[in-house]
Length: 169
Image (cartoon, rainbow, N blue to C red; front, side, top):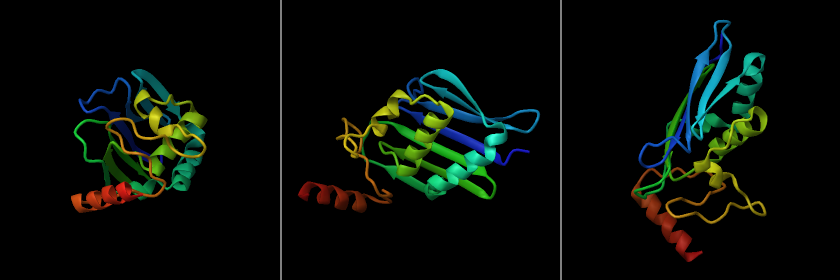
């Protein structure tokens, strides 16, 4: 029986187009082993975890994916990328969403899926995974620069404060 009960990552543009993003779901095979099914850059990709499910779960725990739970990561702009993550495994139930941002934990999960399981990096988020001399590049129009620490803004006052700080630095 699979320990992973739900695995969904959705990443699309402002008009809900997934052609250059991700759309995933979980399939449980007849033998009970989990398969992560992705549409990545409009191509079907299957990641059969099989007997490596525990390794995958251990990596999600190491990444700290549960830190995303019940958080909204949002940059206040009209157009831009939108993502949603919903994962249930063991006793963890993780749901989070964001707009024009990419928290460290999600970035690390996508990088891991790419390096260890050959999930293609979708065109929309390739920007977020590029580093130069250990730093993220300046944001392209409509995107928020990557912050090394958690960025959880719950109201407009936090956003204004952060914006003012960035202008004075």
